[in-house]
Length: 122
Image (tube, rainbow, N blue to C red; front, side, top):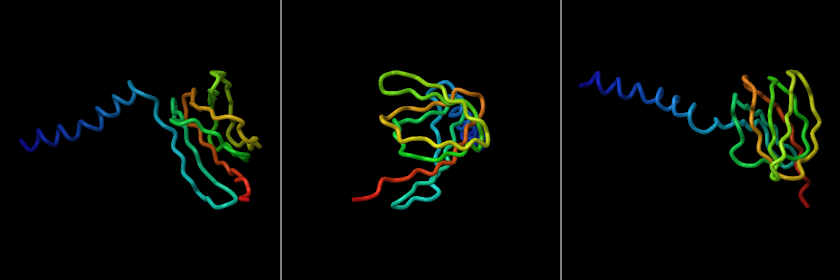
């Protein structure tokens, strides 16, 4: 009986992985490295097929591509744009005017290191 219980418990992660592949896309992960009144520094990873769950509307930022690939932005009006990032690129990105969703359409993880400036408090 003990072996049967262990076999059942050991099979749960495999079932969860199999379900994940069939179900929704994996979520992006984001580590906040520094955050204060002036800046937010993050490392964001989009696994293959990974996407933002909530719409994002980042401010003015500088981004370094740690691992390149292809991302697709979908704006609120349904318009899509494809972004091709190359490893080592450094980009100056303006603040987004409206929220959008991001999805990795490539076959490898995309990793971005970003420094986002915050608006001064009044």
